[in-house]
Image 1: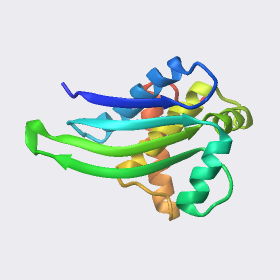
Image 2: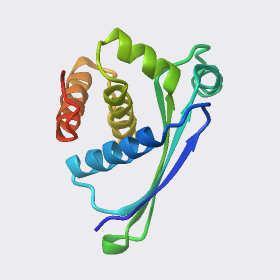
Image 3: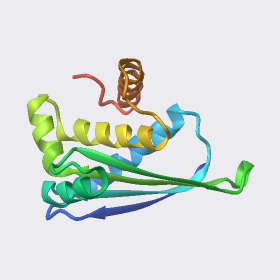
Length: 153
């Protein structure tokens, strides 16, 4: 059985325990969907829009908050059964997640799970620069959300 170390940090003023568990489930379901069997470490940071805007400005040159950022580290230590992956960091703005959930008329749980799945796929090398890439990523995200009972409402 895979063993993943989750380094989850909550920099908001809210109790996000339920979202931390949801983030783990969304992450592990994404790995399973991609056929990744390994041990590893992932960092997930929950923040507010103000902090996200600073991170987005520093790392992407965009002076505005965004919903999720991924910072791939992908470092594999060992091979085979002893493989240990350090995938990187996923940063989620809970403020933006709440706004998007309201705008899209679905639950905050679905939005947070979507953002974790989206961020994980970026860590695994997916992107959405072209329409074809976006279509592939969208279909995969929906498939994964359906597996955790948070598919299209």
